[in-house]
Amino acid sequence: MAKYKSRYPELSFYVDGVERKFSGGVYEAKSAVEVAVLNRLSDAEPDTEEPAQVDEEPKAPTPTKRKANATSSAK
Image (cartoon, rainbow, N blue to C red; front, side):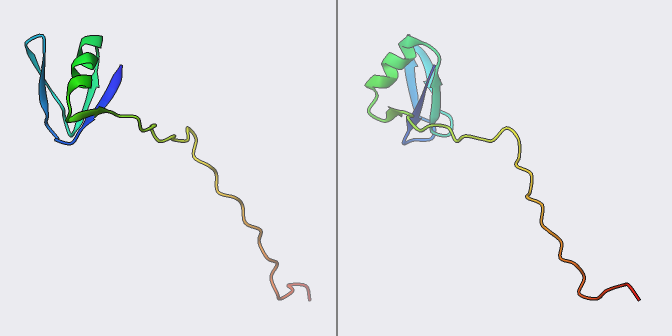
């Protein structure tokens, strides 16, 4: 649903009496109740960074032109 970042790698918070914890400074909220609690935390903020776009197919290398031999093989 929504991703949040924390300045602390393992920030803990409670939702309806159940402990939730950031892992590596990141938490993905799965419900509106979690989002509401996270929005009130001063040590957590929504992660607004766009994920890096990854190309599905790797680009093929461009073919290089071969140069002709300087010496002639005709006799």
